[in-house]
Length: 148
Image (cartoon, rainbow, N blue to C red; front, side, top):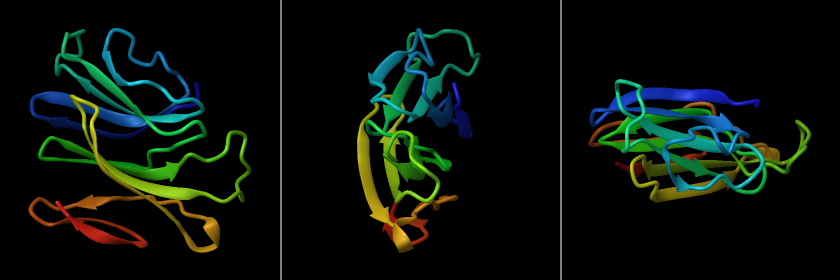
């Protein structure tokens, strides 16, 4: 359904996968922490490492009614850090204005613990990578670093 994977990690004995999808039924059988909001949403999926159905499997959708993307994912101390394009109008053109986001969430509970949205030069924000240092800071181009 037009989705893609932005990152894969193992954290706290769970497999964590993040990406984007139009499919609100992406992980049928997993507990849905936050429902799909429409358009293309970011997802964070927490799975048993055996990749067999497990009562602790969780999926969290992150985004608005428009199209959201996950450009990069990092996992640090059990928290999932994401960056990408935020809530682009459905059916938008390449040169339409875009906003970027950075967020930290808990893959098991779905709680969004921190998030920021910003516009880039010419209203064309499109982050590509994210760096998070343990005991340091998380930094995004065009946005100040934040202590981790």
